[in-house]
Image (cartoon, rainbow, N blue to C red):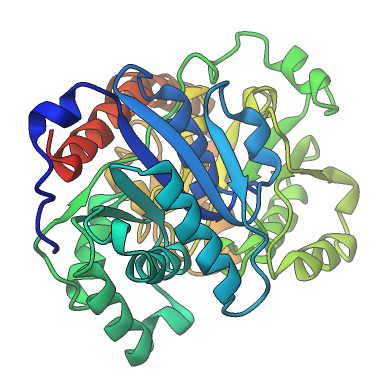
Length: 387
């Protein structure tokens, strides 16, 4: 990892730490949601945030608090030197104390922009990884690229301890590699006492039994598997419905076609992306996350804060959050038949689901609040800025 800046602690302590967040965009997604939550919750007297979107601002930009500025650079597909120059010039103008990049693409642009602008050479980079590496990310070339780029960073953080161990197992430099778990706004996401009314508010039958799922339509989320499992359950439970919140992603057409071809498609509610998802969580009896790979999903924490127990794949970051059998349920989810069997067994014990929802809420409130997350990032910003 790179050496500290020579700027004195006394000089930096006089003003807020200036942090430049670098992302592709703030279009809806788990990482983007986390960036917005962090920017909004950081104390203004200690941190001044500016968000640089390499492509476009995106829908989540509208959620940023007043005073958090956003600049979109209009990056074209492929490598765009002009966007890189614009990033470098903008950072030179703003003179950040820390550059905080998120996932590989923004890190590449930030490192190259820093090399192109001499006044940025000593600005430390804090880099964040938000999901397990897969596909192209596991190729030798990409792994070597990451190892080199990490050495250009003051710190590299992950959103779960499991993800940190995953990166170390792939040969990433261990020095400076830390984890800061995601947090959730427990005021925004709360349980309700009247589930029937909550269902009516989001367009579901009052007496429905609701399985929910949230996420972008990408292969690792395994929505087709969830739909197949629901079909098996629907035969036995006439009031059971499946509600999915999400949109976008390379598997979007596959998921939409799978739902359209289902014999119980009238009981599958595709609600798209919701800028205010809290009422939809409140309508759920159970949330199911069959993802094959996941870091620490914001949707998991939002469901827990809403008092909704979660069924998740035991190979994912949920293992660090969910106490299986107490605040949720972790299983080895290999196929739809297996998933349906797990859910059916849980539904046979409604008291168990209710109790798990109560424990989930308490766990979110005490262990995974936004306040806890902000403290972790403040510590990293201070370390990187040398204050």
